[in-house]
Length: 238
Image (cartoon, rainbow, N blue to C red; front, side, top):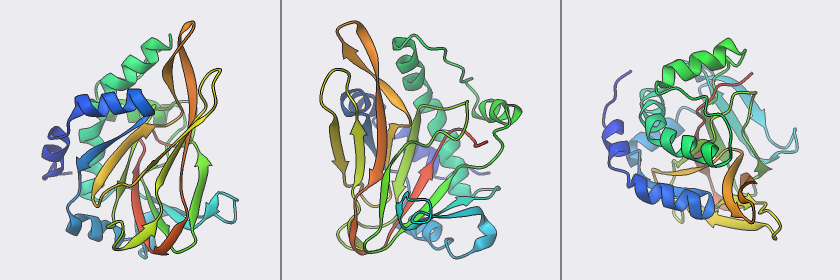
């Protein structure tokens, strides 16, 4: 695996701004992680079944409408490099969140070591996802947990140009706030940019200090065109 330009792009992210956005609303844009050409090359892999371990038809499982595929390993260079570069940037935020909630922080400094722990616990399946939405497709609100060992942050990268390649298909975040009405956030992710968001829940201020607010995410209806996205989950699946 080569670091290529991807590590430099991750280093260039305003991580203080990402932390602030995550604390405010549970998600935050990173800026560009993939060039338009790189995004197109990843999206173009979708028809090649040999690159994937599993294909999910969302309507069959009542997850929404559309389809997604789990990459088989080895991942494309860009996917491998982005996961490795993003993990150490997300790790301090994850540890801070879980400390606020009085939870153990089981994630080591080294990403490879964390994946080894997942595998030792029986979570051996790859979790990088390539999602395809056509007109009328959508993704139901959900959480990407996959097993007992969970990393609390993940990243989705838009592989198309919103308003040009597709309309609609906004990223949705739905947060159940303690002793308050729920809050929804919709985000248009620019071409090649990433969005960091919480996998399961996040700490929010409450009368007793910090409480865990459950969070789910999804995608609004794509009104026209085709939308491809790359999902980067930082734990493997059981």
